[in-house]
Image 1 (cartoon, one colour):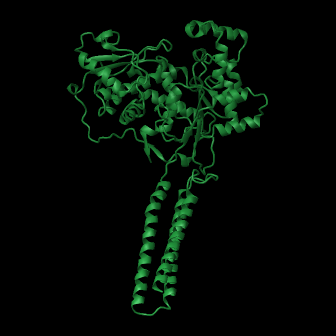
Image 2 (tube, rainbow, N blue to C red; image 1 turned 180 degrees about the vertical axis):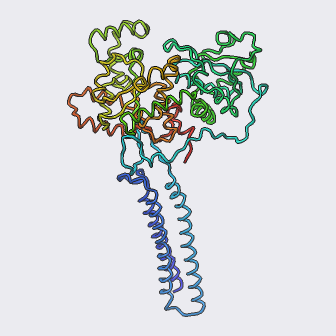
Image 3 (spheres, rainbow, N blue to C red; image 1 turned 30 degrees about the vertical axis):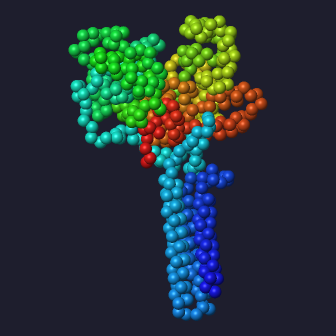
Length: 571
């Protein structure tokens, strides 16, 4: 009889533990992400997950009490004495076994529950598609969902070491100068990369020379746009920076033109090791060297993580515009919000449709024969090698448009904004150069959204006069007004849009930054059977998550457009 009791008691205990484990597993299964159950994705509700796990644990004491009562019933007909002692011992053993099972489940499930509760909001890319967790917030035209913007905070200012002593001159390996070429935003990226390269090689950085560009034709110096003292002070714990070329250098005026002091042919996206192997030895030999050209000459995935963080520190904290530029930008922002006498949100539109951009794209655009002939002549003059005789360009232009590699025309931008639901009264700040085609090209967009304004419409000639001395100062005003807008819309790639979107993401992801799907526009406008309701549905579904939501920095991707993985931390 004792053997029968033993086998029966063990079966009861095993069944109870199995039922308790099954209950916990069912509760966990109900809370797992969509990859575990092929059902409709639940709302982002960690509290509900924890409640279900705790409910599973609360059911376990009931199983323990039933086990004990069953053991009591099975032992009631047995004699007292030694058999009763065995029963009590077995009861204790069963209680211990169930308690251990409970503790095991608890230790196994609590980390999962805690991880789910603290899981950051993060979108994931699947090819070109972006998949984001669902939210319960009411959709808004003017900002991203609040619950999607609370998981990340900027942390580029935080250094790995808390106590760093600034380097003295004799503690560095020499001096480095660079040519920051192009427009303001291309120069900004070059400056960030220059600081990073100086840190990699442990050299003293000379304040970068902002080279006159053939297109911009601007002679702006670093100190004409940026606060030099703030730049040097904020980076003193990272890199030693000086304002000018050392006076002891005999050929000081020839630093950027002398072949023996210039490193050329730097590969695009070069690694940190490349600079240590190819540039540092020459700096140690000559004591002073210059790099040219120097734009995108430093990679992202082939440098230490701290170097990428340093680039963000330069971009978002050290490169500060001069006070008068910041103040004028604030005036323009205030006037944009109060144009109607009431405080309202505004949209900033970066319209890349200048003659140079249209020509360089080698895309085909709407126009009469005369316009097309003039554009062909312009391309042949500016880019003769690419143009050749022009016969091959038509097929190439169709392919580029189909792949979404052509700038959006003003009318196409207006159609996208209407489809997204923005009202006709929307206040839109236009940041662009001279639009190719002039007012005729702009009129369709202006008919859809009459409240299009530029900085010239918001400020007087006298107010803008100090900024017209340097083209980069005017570009800085556009940059700041776009960064501080409620919604930013880009129409084509480029450093301006890239830096604006990256800055807005670094500020917390709440500000919407819309990247229109240009390939969708090419397909939709080429489909005569597609009606307006169907087009609106396509725009809504395609652009639901193309608004600057948190997503990992794509491998090999530009940290200046998406700094999350390298420069932001869990909130």
